[in-house]
Image (cartoon, rainbow, N blue to C red; front, top):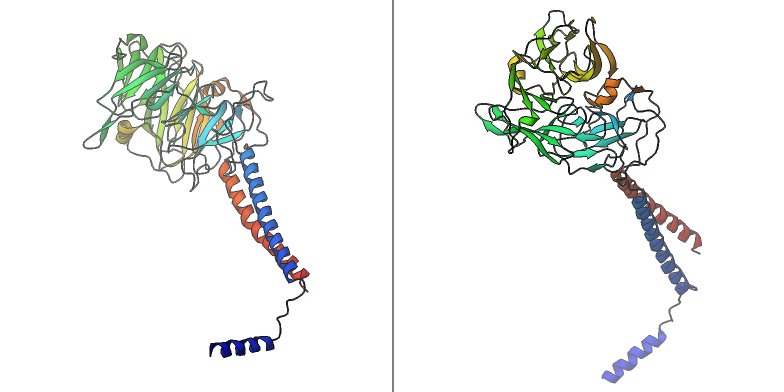
Length: 457
């Protein structure tokens, strides 16, 4: 039975016509296999090339090259907001800066803490991102423009690196020579109902890498901004503690580095004028008085500031012609003095919708960044003048500003040219790489299909 079935199946198989294999079938299959391997090898080669190019173009932190600059250092005559392609300070150091600035035009939804600097000798723009701080209040530029000091770092703009020579606290002021830094201990404590207390304020010497003075506060909160000033010789500290200015000698610090103020000047609702409050003679101090006016340029912002000088010996007002008033200004930050009769300051210009806050709030919490500021002006206040001389005004969208005091006091200004923003940041290179890969692979696949269709019989 089995033999008959096998014989029948064999006869059926013999009757089936043989299968015909198309001519060149195996050659075509071998060719397609080779093409696929070539496409994969080409894609890998493109990938390696793009990765190598991205690595080669990745900005690295390099110090500024030595040698003379093409332009004399100065404040730029024009300021622009840096585009997204602007390189980071840490990846491409700009060198000593003329201005540190921020505001809605600099920040974006993706870079909410973005600030920018522009170099002193050329229109090299760079950006830095970190803590959400305000330029001119919680972030400051050193008098020579070399360092940016924020609450978390002291950044050297000539190398793009964070220096280890930094006090452990948030910034209050640079000394006029930039070697000493006034800071407040950031280990603040909350006390009911709505106040904070600062343990101490210190003066840090970068050359010694140590504190040379500490002043115990405890009874009040010392906010960042215009609340401290060092004398030009670095030997005296003026510190605003609520409604008083404390004067402290660095030499009075003992072995524990704590010292008591030798004089307390009542402010009567005013405030310390800023980091440049000490006059050139070292025996007088500038303070700001505050009042209101009925005919201010911004009716909803009747705040008027008056600059006055007081003796550090007995606290009395020093003689001389008055400085011009600053009407409808949200803040005043004194940078320094060209002479005993000429002061240089940054002032905030409130927008049309800005509303002045109560004076009690400012004494308890300020001076601080004022909401509603639409621009910042760099001005010169001269005794006997009817109005301040405006040297510079920030464009729309730039509301926070810190300048290199040495350039502002000397009046050095350079003509702005074409801005340059450094090498593209790494995130932009990464996005470009992804786009190129996503476009290249479909294009290669389309070309391969067209070639295959042309070669089919």
